[in-house]
Image (cartoon, rainbow, N blue to C red; front, side, top):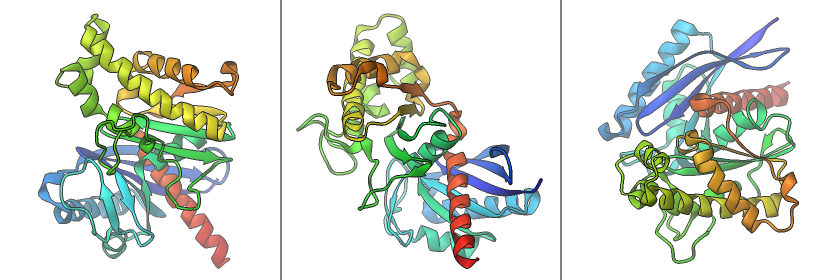
Length: 309
């Protein structure tokens, strides 16, 4: 049995996760190794990218040969791989020709993908969404991301931005969002909003307070769950997914947050029988984004080889 091996990278605000994903000719892909390095975004994008490129090339030298690299990024970039917005990552990233920098510095091909789309690709093909025809995914953490998968492939729509579930307006005239809108699901329910509503110092403290009966924590979680549920209810009504998968750091609280989300969804979905609504927790853990980035790179390689062949 032969296989190809890919380096998947999830560029995070604090740490950058890496996995080597082995894809055999027969059978399912599997994670061969994993690790992380500090991002240190406060040092500026040039220092971050120089350190990353050095680490990725070292991976290829020591653990290779690697067929290609996929990088999940915390924001949006244009068709040329020039950064338009990187949410939650320190430094001046707007306008950075990320694809070109990787192409010049790496000793293997590189593919860029939004981190929430990478999460969707991994969970949809290999994780909690496996086997479902239409999957809607949402990640809850420092930001709130989303993605749509149909029949095993990501759905981007005509504009390339389909799947930004977190940037639906769920509270008109609500708090500002980093995307420039007001009242987005992300602007209402991302981690710093949840922490502020609860009057705590961390997400962990919020859910500890919830467990101990703190009424302010309970109200904060209920509020976040309400508006996230509205966003998911809209996606269910519009797309009719077979399954909704929720992951990310906040989702690690399990039913403490999934319960309020489900309750809100059931309140706001009237056209779909409630027994047909399948909302589940992600299953691949913190490596999902890196796994999905590796899958994206493998897809690009397969498409390129098919064209050249």
